Length: 449
Ligand SMILES: *Cc1c(COP(=O)(O)O)cnc(C)c1O
Image (cartoon, rainbow, N blue to C red; front, top):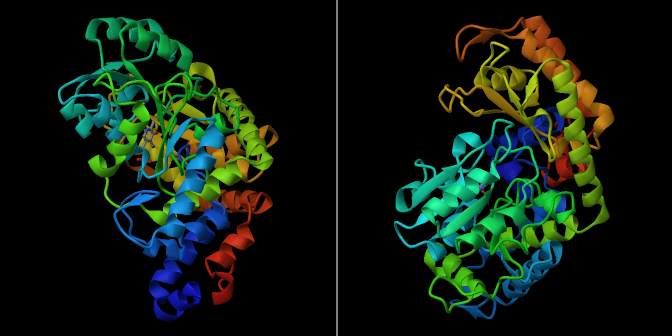
């Protein structure tokens, strides 16, 4: 009903939303930090629960009228705990960034020390980058990668011993290899630090058993709910075996600290419809189909890395263990931003990414990051990666760089490649693509798919 009304009353906005559905259907998205949410997740996220205002937690709200929301939030917490085999879950964070800020604020005193992976080596802004409040309010120390492009645990241990951080962070936004959470915990224990595992990028693999879980190794685990979990925009905090371990005051258990850290310390009202959508996404992630997609994601990424390397691209670390492939473009004459733009023109989405030792600014960069989450959701696995890699390679070689950000591509070649991408997408449609279109009212307006 709302969609019909939207189309009738606001065709300008409705047209943009419809166009987005069509674009998603016809572009080959290899964005490592994205996945496609099921129509039922989108429906829960757009539900009337949005109209409920209720600060606080189930059974302890600061507003009346939250009985249904209480039940929904309890369900989301219970499903998150079951999915990740966790003792504690908080489903209220509006994003993984806010989850990280809340956890750090609860554990690290102002000016205290944290140790995380550096931004240029694949870490996240909220792990102490100077561009984030975490780099200004805390003394941030960063570990990096060894010559093989992998995390250098010896360096992590040395820096931990030297700087004695309050929190050690294990997690990354651009790192294609398995994280050894047990080793990180040993290092954290050796200096009495809390271990925060940030699995924003790999939460789906962890849920499906395709990447070792940090939940019982780390004191606290955080994640986004949209990157690999097929959920709504949002964050999640988890804790396992150590959920009752004492906080920095030596008394208050971590689960209680986390409850307060999110509300009232860092957020006001939760987003009830987003929490309903999280509950739906956690249920879907517990189904066998999700695990099959996760397996396809990993085997696809491995094949994609091998094909790109065979075509002469420099694949960082020589391959991948997860959903992500990082390519160093410095030998090709292209910059990250040129590669991103020319691929987008031809209907392929990847994003520019800094590579270790990158001298180009963050808006230019010397690399790209590709991911297989959405390819796997389209049912594409190892046997389809030759075509994906070949198309990507053909687009990249079709671009003639004219400096760091400008380039030229023959318009006929561009049209031909765009059509090839469109045909590939049509052969491997997104799951529920018709249902998605209907959910958005596209069919009803008569627009073509
Ligand atoms: C993307 C990312 C975040 C931030 O997630 P948002 O939900 O977008 O705020 C935090 N940590 C890591 C490792 C990430 O990759």
